[in-house]
Length: 277
Image (cartoon, rainbow, N blue to C red; front, side, top):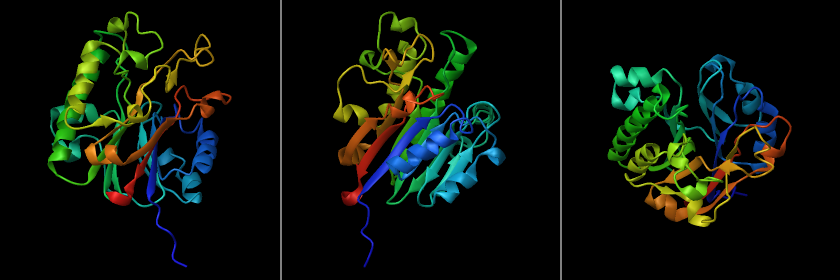
């Protein structure tokens, strides 16, 4: 009997805050959720030390871009991806700005059948308002705008951008938005930088299905923030128009955050009905 073609594609994004520390948690979650592509951020490991074998044993393909102890992104896919690349340089060229920003491993992309380009990001945190790292974050986002604009100019496939954006785009993405304009991850300049990216033709998959406040993807380890739901929604899936129309669900799974020694982020999964793409 011919195997029935899967018409729903499940793509998840998860900042795991060290893949080697959370490996068992990630593998268990992947087994339970059976996602087609898992986009990881903050893997914190060089490429040679990424635990590829454990994912390959479960039937997944592994694509990584990492560095020791910091940053790092990965794509874990049931099926082989095509046109995989890392960093800004492959598309924007090798020049001073791409060299500087590609030193930190924060961007990986590839195409999954039926022609959806996934762009997995770990946006810089920014540390403190008006610090050097804050300026770096804004400049990184400006380069991301140029990168995505160049991607879109190439035409199809469809584009899905996901990851840890380290930005709460709206006040109801924060448990307490009071004084948010002076708080890293919520300043006007950060929001405007991300809004400029989204203005290229991207929409928030989660807000298609849930407009309520109190829905978060990150909670500080301190002050029992998770238990009190004092969180931020900073992990996102942004979709081009056709994908947005075909999005069937987008959910935040808080269960892994309840485990012993969890990541401070929860995975966010979007489901795309690909039958009519």
